[in-house]
Image (cartoon, rainbow over all chains, first blue to last red; front, top):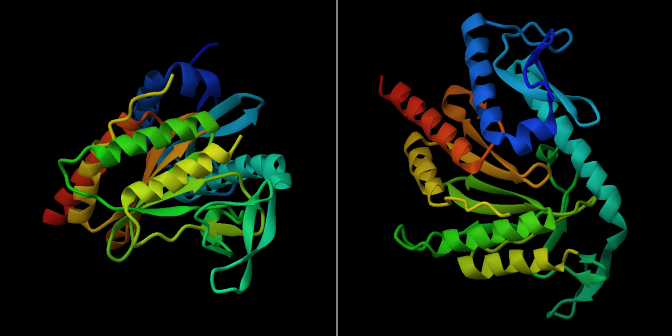
Length: 224
Length: 75
């Protein structure tokens, strides 16, 4: 496929070409386009938007075909959120039948409902609640882990992350690592198969890095 | 085939994020196997989102951006 055929608002490309077979070319090419955008003061291509373009972003224009558009920061973010939402909704429809709310007895004797995968409570899950609007209106199963750094010379945390990444890749699960908060701290979030109305969070502030990652790995392994 | 990720480079991003008093998020997208990093800096109301790409490239972008932010703060 022709790689950089210039269109009105950008370049017609294929997602496969751009992101999989030629990731380095794609990254370099996008950076060049970013420079052009800045140098030429190009305007946002979104309808009705008069802001200066700040980013190039891929917008789906057909099956497997994407086009790069000049977008301002706001429209770029909206487009990104829309893509994420569409992807999540697709996965939700595939997995929703396997997820359910099941009642379990706590050690205190009280009963509470927890999210279950294939009828079994997801390990480590300690709460069910609603996720905020930053999840683009789609509620997710979101195990959250605090990654505690042992020391700067110890490679073990990074080796564990590599294994987790390999597992996530194998199971086709997205994940995020957040370094933030007050004060900043690591959090690890897996965007697991989604449910529409609830989320489950692992709160593991007192747990060690290994234990939290083991939970993440265990949860991932349970996914088919 | 799984890529070997240089996770230690995240430590450099963390150190610079601490210095610049910003937070960041690294995301791995399974849909196309790429990473991206977003950095939030409340100080100058800037929200930078890198383009998706390999881990090394997005980390490089993040470090460059943080260097720029730190330089800006020094001025």
